[in-house]
Image 1 (cartoon, one colour):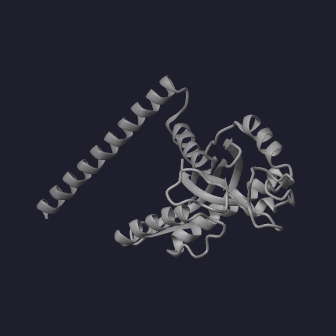
Image 2: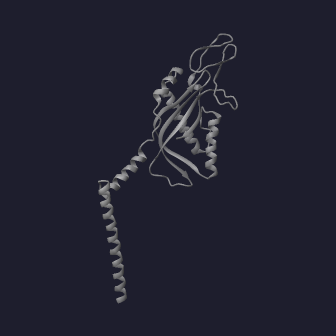
Image 3: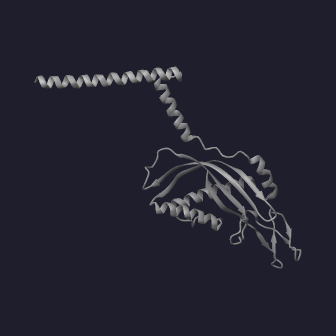
Length: 247
């Protein structure tokens, strides 16, 4: 009986010692946070928790250079609206993420072979690791042009997009409760015919009268250099998705 009482006393002393130690540490931390941060320990914990939540919910920043590139893009392609370009970039990004998740590039439309190859390589990389990458509940925040180049034959417009989604790897991760914030770039290239191994994209119109090729950038009325017949184009059909990248 005495041994039991002694054991209980020892356990009680240990519990009290642990409690006192925890309270002492809490008091020291509380004093330190008040001294250096001007907040109590509880207020500091709430502040950190709010900061982490804000970080999860705050969209990623993207380039703010639309004022530099948008006017030139609109001058070259007056038949297109800027909103149409943004829509094309957004649609392309969602289709790319969906293709990665479904492990198939068949759903990617209006894309170059190099873009489909880029997505296919990503799918193969995940497959080799025995992972299925998920991009669920995609929500787009902001889309703006980040670069634009053109000459007499070609044009490329790179758009940056901030978005969020529930991102995880099936077979590796647990499904997260909160979304992950991302930023990605999507490059749209003005072209339909691609020379094998070429670094530029060229769009050619065939003259409806003599069949000769007619080259241009922009949706302007052109004349065939061989027979003088007027040639027009449906501009939006001439833009293809040529690259993407996570920023």
